[in-house]
Length: 306
Image (cartoon, rainbow, N blue to C red; front, top):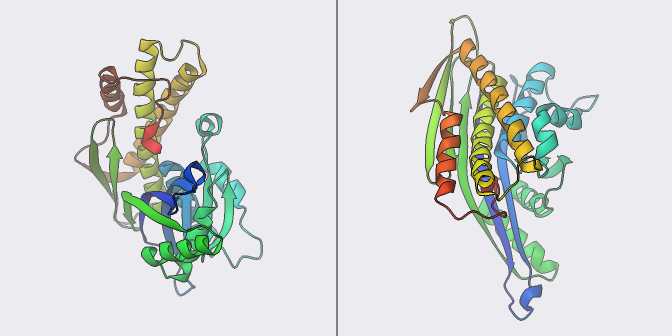
């Protein structure tokens, strides 16, 4: 099965047009990632899912889990025994994420209907996905339809969406490529990796190829957090032996796990990076240097994922 999908970072702003209400006027910021996936085997009907999440790596890793389950067990929606979505989500989470990522959530849609969610996502996302299904993926029409829905509820609103591509994945059994936009503390860079089997008789494990993209996305996020909090520790903004410092220790352990998973992928395939494989330790050092020259406060957090 071939996969061609993109991960978007989205931020919706829902703002009431009327100004007479002052501070009571509706204003909602709704950040999310969005990743569609089309699954089809042979002549079987195509199944399309939309995966939304708070973190880029969480959504990407969940998509990889869904692909793996589909390849192993076939079409999902027509099964006599329903897929255990909660278990699939749980197995996609690391020990670090369960313990330290309190903002994690996932929402999965099929034909505009929410079929699974975990954690707290904004109900507006359910509205926009229902509208999008009715408009065959035309986002502009979907936003206008959502505005009409708010108007019918007594709220005259303007909805805008800031959207950027974070990941493009094209993966098949004989070759594949994942391209990513990595947002650092002071600059945004791009890189990609391509895969080919070591032997012509072998095939690429598509879920693993996509999971590696999730590993890079998570690794960059952790490197940013470690570098930022290291300088906070140096400046006394966070304290030694505090929960924040303990999280840094666990984050470094998680980085080692991610690097081992990436190394495992490299041992299985011919891998080419352009320009080069991201070095998490260098990213930590760059973020720490950036933080030294910046006025940090206790309110500064992992803005990378917002």
